[in-house]
Length: 332
Image 1 (cartoon, rainbow, N blue to C red):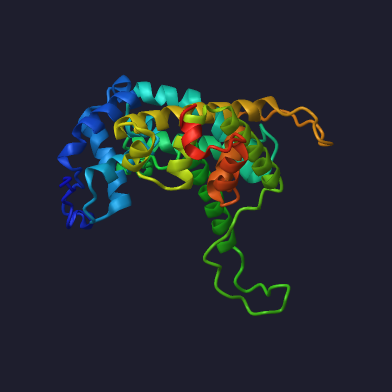
Image 2 (tube, rainbow, N blue to C red):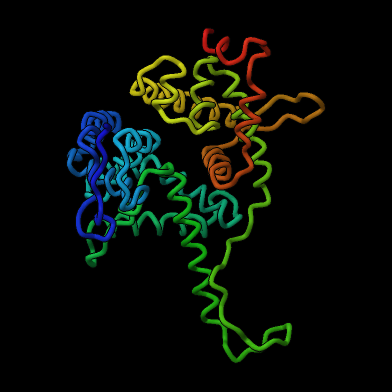
């Protein structure tokens, strides 16, 4: 019988969530893949970050080693290692973070505020978060680093944009609290309690970004080898486990995990390249220009937020027109 994690009571703060012993080699491989050592991050610290992420997913349940590995395989472990190293105060990690994400933060802030790139308000929103992240991580005031709330289930870019959006919402709320309680509202109703939630303005270009993402994803799926496309379909559209996929396509589950990670990276690179390059005029549609880095990140973020992307239809549209069924595709 496969070993399970014994974490009864761990969710209540009485001890750190622990993986089954059989996960040990898999955790070591993730440590190598994440390049955590490049930031002088210890394996123990990295494993602890993975355990906190798993604790959010499994709480006090006792998942099997396979279930743990399936979950871990889907994490953005490179981003998690970078965030963890920043939280630990690694100078090398901070240098990479600033060089890699400062421009993105400013572009995302501009999109959230519906301002043009380079607008002073957008720069201030982004740079304030950057300053706060660094100040908190360095321990001033005894505060905990915000990076400790990043668990790798989304990309670091997606998480940072969510933090920026929340900062904007908090600013709107703070401004509303200073409105005079004695002032009568324009509709004549008595003043009431402030709503529990204030949403930032909707992006009028959201549908355009989603359409561009769907087009890029369709092109990326069509460019994959048939076997790789089947791996993704089984995992994402049919929700199969790594073990089930391995039995169907004749691979060990560890090979399935490695291949899925490889295909994900290849597909993301293709999607981003298509978004950046734009499209030529076709079928009566006008040509569309390429997106910049911030717009590409925004398109991916919008796709991740909603249910507008129908994976079943996308996979069906990219299948070869053959009559042999899945077995024939796997033989290609």
